[in-house]
Image (cartoon, rainbow, N blue to C red; front, side):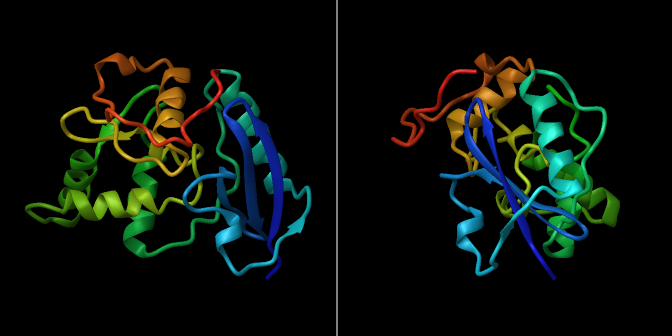
Length: 184
């Protein structure tokens, strides 16, 4: 199966989008924790319909608007990860959800008493389609801004772009040195 890549210059840094014939497989920032360069796949730079739709979605998003469509996605992960990512896709623009709330939703759906928030955190942390599958909208149960593959400062800027009041959130005292991100 062929895999394709294109690049996108966002206000928060250069991004990449990858896809296969089924849809977008990853979106992220070039300097984030997990990147297309971490895989063994060889990508062909291209402008497929899926990648065009992904860039169009990002144009709308970075213009401060909610896109009224989702580009074609090919979520690749375990059944549990996909279950978590489907919940992420339902978090409304400008809103947040906690890891615990996601765990409770899964537990209820499965008829369980409870589900591990840490397991949910692991699935959220391995979301390969940043922003479009909005893992930046997940926070800790006490209002803590938690990790984000693109950096915590970017997470804060994405939430702010969506109109979420981040002043109520608890931000780690020391941000990593790579978190020097341009303002939107």
